[in-house]
Length: 278
Image (cartoon, rainbow, N blue to C red; front, side, top):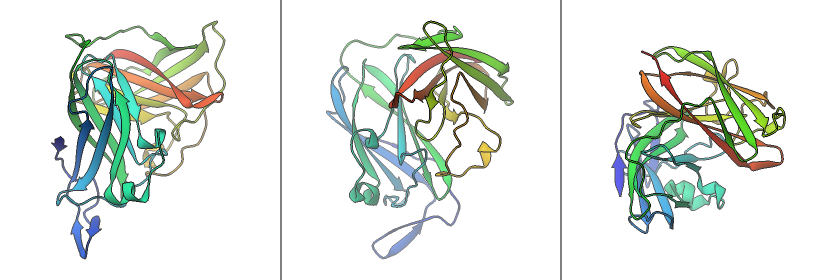
């Protein structure tokens, strides 16, 4: 089991109540276990995660944000494997899940080695992100170094995505980019539908995985939305715009996710590598 302790991400008057005592939430702690422990490459494992406060009490009132209570990302250190999973993908949440703020789902890691685990959730109208590591045994192993493909055109199944920078990425300044979608014959994709409450998602990480974050298809005023507030459907394709401010210079990778009306629960995942200038 691994544990992260991090600074409070919520208002100072947040409380979590168990028994007859209310306690101020000054920290969010995420722990996990796996079965088997450790997980083995290529074999399904059960991943169980729990969100607690600094007094080891469950956060009983986690909010639903982007149609899920907690989003969990698994990213291999060589950056070739990316998974975005939730318990709700496999079975409905129960009252016990919510009361204990504990959630489980199956995951299969394709390779051995270390993976960055990223947890995104919300509490009292504040978004919270925590990070951890998990080590997977077995074979095959990951590449020794991060794999970065700087092509601006990549694909998944029957979709090809082209990345265009509308505002080049510089550290500390807002960048803007557009992902243009076509089919393999070059025809524009115009049937994008919302997946997890947004027309598009982009998970972004620094190549060393020290920094991880995510953003969504951009529209004016999105920065003012609180967790649980629906995002409008604006982009059916072929273009999906994004804005983001990268904190530091260096190599990055992002995974863009979106869905089409024919399979709204089966998102496409297309990755791009790029450099952020100082």
